[in-house]
Image (tube, rainbow, N blue to C red; front, side, top):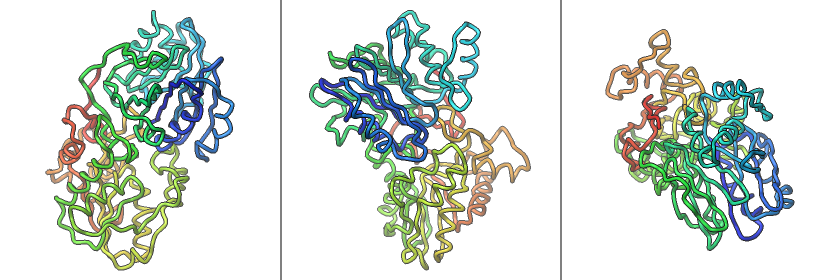
Length: 466
């Protein structure tokens, strides 16, 4: 999932844009980009797969002059893009995933369109969205038409001379929030980007809502809808602890998830730990509920190693997982450890680079407690897992059934014998003492939204369409 940030000020916005975008660095690992509109468009895009955003852009932003700007941390496509159109020139960034990008691109090519931005040998989905917008009778109609055509999700920031058009995904799977600081406005994926820049949350955009942020302030261009299916994984893993979505704190949700895990547990332990960083909040909650002390048998070496889940290749994910966690042998030796993790996706990193380190440094027992249920389906709405073959739960099912099966409902139901066999298989594969997943009803309760307002597709296979 990418992260976007936009800024509208009375003065030069470049420094605010740099730091506001940088506060989204946990949302992607491939590209960073910024664009500022003053007397002309200033734009810079860099590959950030091997370096941090700030180091790449620290010199660039000093040459950017203008009151309006947008930035992005992208998980796939180079952006922002500058587009010339009959609506005038604009620059655009997006967050989300379009499943039918090739189908839509083929249709546009047949109708005489051309694509100039090719990403990794394929169509740049940001350019596709821009071309869909320019086919509308008006700019606003063009933005609305994107959501009529795409399968997947997309939240959009589009910068023109009148300001920033901000459009949230029609079912709200990706968040957008408006912040205000006196006469200045910001729009962001992550509310944590506001805090140190002095912005206060003014409005969480509704699903499908489109606003214009310009010199006249905040103007609604198209109302949103009440139907919402925001990604639940934002609270469990993707989001930053200091952020909130729909007014609900990420850190507090993680603490409640940990408490729920502890309430259903009977294991005896000497300490509770979280896999840094996203497992820490869950572990703190488990510790508060269980009374077992929270300690750090594994510590993360600097933020520079990033997240081991988001890079696109297994080789890079393994390298990050190997290098970022350093064991503290004196804390591990001889102890029974409850290890809280946000989730088990593929399981290879947890097995080879986390649990293995605990055993090597003398752990007596290792009890794994993921804060969400087994992941059963690859995400359709953000770039993460792309195949069921990658998922640890599906590997277990394939081993138990002797083949891939389509109907996995019995394995989703936590009361079934097949579910327990699957969990036992994963536990043995990981090399853990015990494994106990969060129940989906406990996770939903910890988030605090009605179940129908959450996207739970990766656990249940169910999703709505606009």
